[in-house]
Length: 595
Image 1 (cartoon, rainbow, N blue to C red):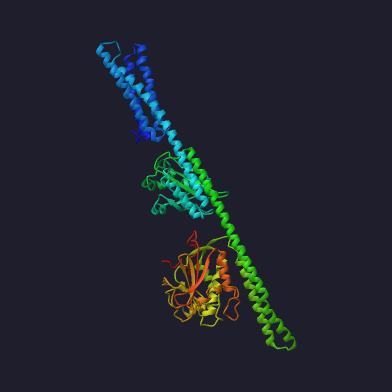
Image 2: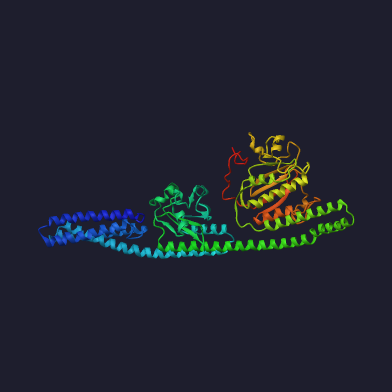
C-alpha cells in the first residue's frame, strides 16, 4: 500500500469508518430498550468509528500525514483491524463452544474491528510522522548540501552564463528536483528569455513563453508574478492552479506535478527567476521554500557583483582608451597641428613682403588642414567614450543615412542581405559608416571625388544598374519593383564604378568594396592615428571607426573582400533584443522588400 496517494488512502479510511458507523447505529436500534448495553455496544463504538472517518477526512486532505506515508498509515489500520478481529473472533468461538454468556459473537467482533482499526490508525499516524521527521531531516540535509554546493559554484563562476548553467545543473543532479531553468529579465521589457536549463530538452525551452505583463495570459502565471513581487511563487499542484492553464499540456507531457518559481533578487533589481520542477505534489514546504528563496537572493547578489565587476572592467578599459587618446591628442597638437601652423606663418611672412595670391592660398590650405584635424580630434574625443545607453539600431537605415551625406562620385552602395539590428548608439554608427564609405571612395573610386554628395544609389545586390534619372533624383533603387536579394558580395557594378557592400556576419556585420584593397602588412596599422595614404588625409578616419567600435565593446578587423578590395568586419556584437525595428512602409528599407 506504500504507493497509494493521500486521497486514495483517506477515501478508504473514510469509507471504512462510515460503514462501521452505520453498523453501530443498527446495533443501537436493536438495543434501544437496553440503555446500558446500547451505550457499551453501540454508542462508544459509534464514536470510535466516527473518529476513524474524521481521521480519514484529514488524511484525504493531506493534513494528517505526508503524502508518501498515507498508504503506510492505511496499512497499519488494516493490520490493527486484522489483529483484533482474529483475537476476538478466536475468543468468541471459544466462548460459543463453551456455551458461555458472552454477547453475540458478531457484535463483539464488530466492536473489536472498530477498536482495532482506530488503534492501528493511531499507530500508523505515529509511525508515519516519525518516519516523515527522519526523512525530512535527511531531505533538509540534502537541500542544504545542494544549496551549499550551488553557492560555492556561484563564487567560482567566471561569468553570468556559467553561473546560471551551474545552478540549474546542480539542482537537477540532486534527487530533490527533476528539472530547472532560468529565465532572464531586462528591466523595461516585458518578455522573460530562457538562458539556462537542465533536465529539459531544447524543444520544451523553445516552446516556453513568459511575460511580466499582468494583462497577458502568459504573464499571469507564477513566473510573471515572481518578477513583479520579488517573492517565491510555490505551486503545490500545477493542475489546480488556473494561471498555469496555458502550460498544462506542456507540464503534463513532462510529468510535472509541482513547481516553485524563485525570483533572482539583487540589490535594486530582479534579474529574472529560477523555475524548479518536481514530479510529485506538495513538494515545497515552508523550510524548502525558505532555502530556495535564500538561493535566489544569493544568485541575485552574485549577479550584482558580476555587474559591478563588468562595469569596473569597462571603466578601466575606458580610462586606458582615454589615456591613449590623450597621448594621441598631444601628438596632434605638438606635430600635426604645428606643421600647418608653421606653413601658415611662413607664408604669412612672405605675403607681407610680396603681395602674391599664391601665399594666401597656401595659408588658406593650411588653415583648412588645421580645421579638418580639429574636427577629427573632437570627433575622436566625443565618440570614443564608452557607450552607456544601448538602443536597437537598424543597420540598413544607418548605412542609407551615411551614404546620403557622403561624396559618392560614381560609387554604388549595395546590400548583400539584410544587415539586421544591433544594440548601439545610432549617431556614432552613422559616423562609422560615413568614415568607411569615405575611405573606400577616396582610395578606390575611379570617378571624380567632386561628385554630388549623396547623389549615388543604394540598392540590393542583384538589382539592375541604377538609371541616370535615379542619380539625378538621388533616390534609392529599392523603390523600384522587382527588387531581389543576393547572398554574397557582388564582384563589381554594371557601370564599372566602385561598389561598396554592406552585409551581415554570424556575430556582426561588414562593409566591403571592390577597390584595390589594403596590403596584409598594413592591415593593423591602418587604424592607428595619423595613418593615411591620401595627401590631404588627416589619418583619423579609421582610428575613429575603431574607437567607436571599442566604445560599443566590439572588435573591428580588416581583411580582403571577395572582389579583392577591403572588407571591414565588426564582430562580438550580441543580438538585439528586438531583431527588427518598426519603420514606415515605402522607405526603401529591407523590411519593405522582405517578401
